[in-house]
Image (tube, rainbow, N blue to C red):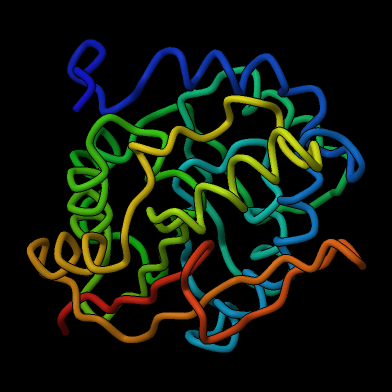
Length: 239
């Protein structure tokens, strides 16, 4: 496990990696093209599982704000947090262009926010973040601390197995060029059983598991039962 940076659950190399790409966050054909294709599917899953209108939502690791703005358009009051300063600057700039009033962005970590705003959110998303932090188990626990009783908590990440290595790393980064090389490290990928165990240990209750499938023929994602590569998990905080 990688060490902490000044007590924060963050890898400086990962922050630098995403900050260097910050000005391309909202380019649907740029380095974040897969996120643009994935975002409507993730958003629909969250909406169908929990509903968004009127909920106070937290987007952990919000980056340039793709999911944050999507949840706000669905009627949620959204707080997006990240430690990548350049990405947050892009998120704030795009927010001015979009004119959405129900989003705030804060440069902070989940554990720091949990100290000042514990049990404050009706719905929490942590998408494509767990595989980039030194201690994913701690991040899951921090999300639980931020959740109100009965709140919905969503995680998405990548499975760890040979198929995921071939498709999510070799094919996506080195063959098809869907992501910059080095975006993911195999050792950091997370099996659903591991994520579920950490969430249960944190006090969250399992609700649903679904896979995400990428079709290279039409550059689109869809939900499937197979969780061999990309997947999402839905949990609920005890009432």
